[in-house]
Length: 120
Picture (cartoon, rainbow, N blue to C red):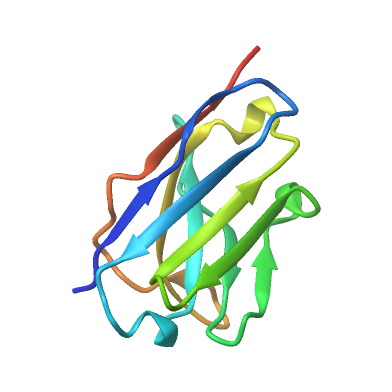
């Protein structure tokens, strides 16, 4: 099964920016629709942004205009550029392959994720 390794999280003040990266352990990365998810304490994991094999994107309403998902198939990597961060963006962020059109995670096994903490 494909594995994903997330990185790039950290502590940032409100209004700040972070760029998350996720590297996939497959040479067939270009064939996967990908998504970034997050899970805040006490809440269910939710899809934040998705990108299809063709480059089409999907965002949850709360991050539209602030977050941008992109991919580099040659590097087997998907990115999440997060700008204008808010306190409510605090969560552990994960990436996973997704199925369209539901944008649900395709794999039951998740990586460790990367912690994003927005705090003043």
